[in-house]
Length: 69
Image 1 (cartoon, rainbow, N blue to C red):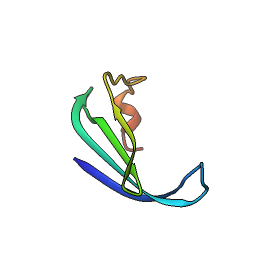
Image 2 (image 1 turned 90 degrees about the vertical axis):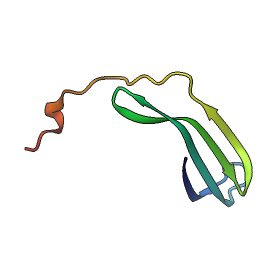
Image 3 (image 1 turned 180 degrees about the vertical axis):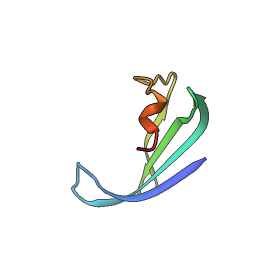
Image 4 (image 1 turned 120 degrees about the vertical axis):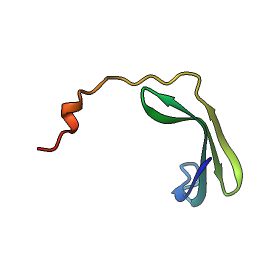
């Protein structure tokens, strides 16, 4: 599990709150690690729980894009 804590502005109240985002259940998708579950808490209370069923990359980039100039 990976966790991040940040300060964000709550859109409803316009007050700054502490937001903790937790990423878990990582899966390899086309060679990259992706979190399939995300949990977001604001001031310690559950704000959102997200579960990804399918992850599809929009396009495949050619390796030459990442070549040094």
